[in-house]
Image (cartoon, rainbow, N blue to C red; front, side, top):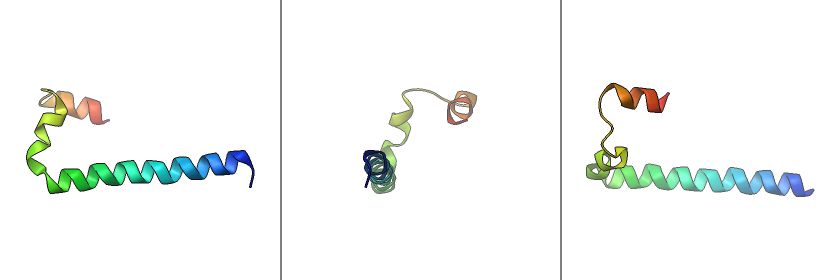
Length: 50
């Protein structure tokens, strides 16, 4: 395998592990979801998520 293929595989696998960790953490500790926004409320959240 070339270096580029290995690089892409590592990045794809690593990204899925990180995003999966976020999803699991947010589902286990739903009370902490609001704190992750850092005080951003209302319509500003829509802007940041887009």
